[in-house]
Structure formats: C-alpha cells, structure tokens
Image (tube, rainbow, N blue to C red):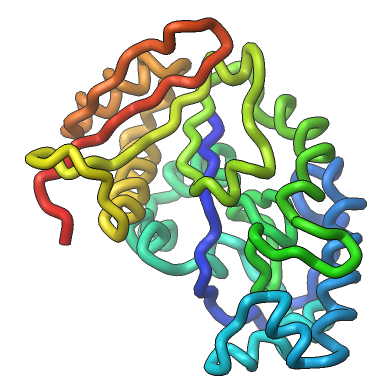
Length: 260
C-alpha cells in the first residue's frame, strides 16, 4: 500500500545533525528535479528578501522563512516525519506509534512537497517553506515542474497494491495516477454526516486518524474495495461506489458526526 499525504504548511525547526544530501533521499529518480528547485529557491532567498517573500506568498510575520530557505544547504536535517507538523500530522502521531507501525509508516507513507517532490517520512530533510502553488522565476509553476519526473517515478513506487490518495488539490496536481494504477487508487472526502457538507479543519484530523488506524492495525488492503471493508471494520462510516469506468479512481466518503 502507498499512502499519498500533503505536507504541512508549518514545520518543526531543522535538526542539529548533518545537512541534507539529495542523493540520500528516497525516489532517486527525482534527484535532478529536486536539485533544480533547491538551487533556485536558495538563490532567490539569498537575494532580494522582498522579492522572495512575494514569490513565496509569505506575510510580513513569516519574513524569517526567507532566511531559513537561504540556508537550506547548511541546515541540519531530521526525518521528514518529525519536520511536518499541523493537524493531520498531530492526529497521525508518528512519534507515538509502536515499532511495527513505525516500520509500516516508513514503507507506506509518501509526503508530497513543492521543494522535494515527494519524500518518505524516514528521509532526512531540513525545515523549509515552499508550497506546491509557488511559481519560481526560472522554473515556473512547481506542480508543472514535477509532473514529468513524477510520471516516471511514481508508478513504480506505487507497486501493485492500493494507492490511498489523501493529498489536497494543489499537491495532487503534481501527479495523477493513470490507467491501471488509477484503478486501484482511492481518494477520500470527509463529510459532516447530518449535512453531507465537506468539512475543512476536521478533514485533516480525520485523514490523520485514518492513516494511524491502518498503521496500528496492520491493515494492508490490496485495493479500494478492501479498503472500504477495512475502514468499516476499524469503526469508520464509509460510503463508496466503484467507478463507472475502468482506470478511474474510487471516491470514498468518510462521514463524521462532529466537525470541531
């Protein structure tokens, strides 16, 4: 199983260990594309601070993120699962998982990133600020920059099992499963059960809990239909229908009673 996650906007500080080496990251087929983004981001942020802040869409209060990006090559790295914070990752609670569940997390979880493309939670990276919606002056829109290398690398990473896609639309734009891979992909919406309206904040928390439940239970469904059964067995209210055409992903609705 491969679980596709968005990153968090907020991030923990960089580590105190050795700096990043791009060659150490998973999915080595993305190395050249990562190097291109890293080089331009560092150059941008080491230059005109106001221009960098504008390109990155940073408020005045986040001005310090520009300097952080400028020092990415020297900053200490730590596991990506420790760098990413926020609602989804708080609910996922990687640090509190037992050894077997952490092993599954290292194998199953793939976090998408405007800077790195996609990384495993065990990959060591520094803290950074660069969303997938950014348009760098030289490379242009990052989602478009990532599409070709992702199309080469991700089908192999997906293997032959279930792909559980929990990304937001900005990150989904960098790679959309196609053909046979799409047919064993499931996307998830979180709906308020009484109103059937999509929830926002609680959406992230619920997705984090779903992943945590699968990791701790050791559930490894082989396809979308098996995922529906597994989630129901874990206590989630799930509605789903098989797609009308082959090669289309399943769309699952997880119903929640509370939205706070």
